[in-house]
Image (cartoon, rainbow, N blue to C red):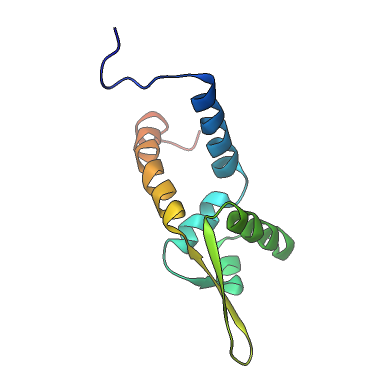
Length: 113
């Protein structure tokens, strides 16, 4: 008997979960998305908000997050040209879906072990 709170687990749902973990588990994704959650940012702002990331790494991750439809790149025609990166609605939903996991980690991993 299956309760209404149980989720059916099958191969397809497991594969979707693995794809999501692949995205959020890739280095720098979390800090970049959290920086973007504070509003549209330019490259140099992301670099300042994500300590330890190199310019090539940041360039690559921003591009990958755009390809995953988690960031939107906007070119503002000005002198000089300004490029900003903004979270998409999908990224905002991803961040919201991770909040229960964050609360779980506070309970089960209360210290930096």
